[in-house]
Figure 1 (cartoon, one colour):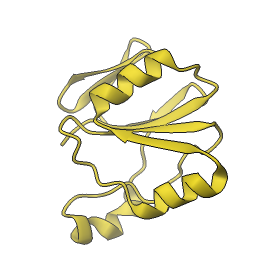
Figure 2: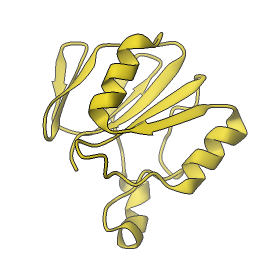
Figure 3: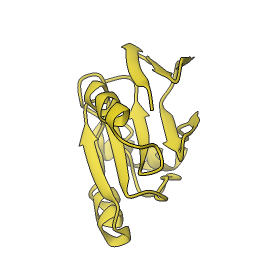
Figure 4: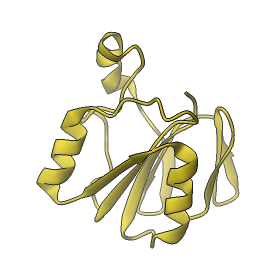
Length: 117
């Protein structure tokens, strides 16, 4: 899957630009709905990625792009749930996450890509 962080706040996936976080689920791109995670904002100083969100667990791997500076908090419950499901969760800054996605077959990995911080 061809993805790249174009600028702070904008990502391009397969030639289409998005001005918001995205979820890639079996090759389909959708907006990340982070509302369920907002209840944890005070604890982290930023809305984290929580297991309360609609996470695409339907692949062997989940790549989480943690933002331009790598500051998106990924809650421990997400990592634990990935382990429980047998899904390898890789959390790295978004530019690195995009590089990983280019090298992996889309049917083997899903992604959540944060476009700020």
